[in-house]
Image (tube, rainbow, N blue to C red; front, side, top):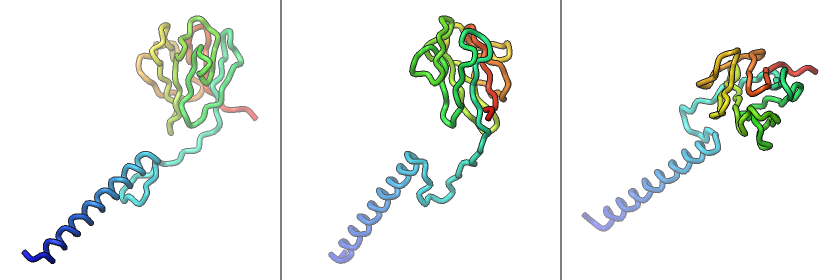
Length: 149
């Protein structure tokens, strides 16, 4: 082979290598930032607008306490870092988590000692609930309801 052919092959291989590195960078960037950055076939999540809701303590020592439910998961427990901190000795530091889904709310016990009860049944696995369902933890009963203006 002539020197010209070898040089062209080297530059072609180098260009192919740089193309692969740039493509890898774009894919990683889109995964980290959640942007589709020109990647074809990426599925865009359906935007669901839910009515404003709040998690309210309806019975127990902390009756009347509430927290707005946002798009990010909220935690309930005794610890001050929880979104809804309740002073109840029968509640764990981080007792449960509530996440917003398109068709309801997912309630998940975070390994609490005394357990979480949804409509009278002990919560063993995450469960999808609708507003109005009663959640009992410790001496408090909570529910999700529409924010009143």
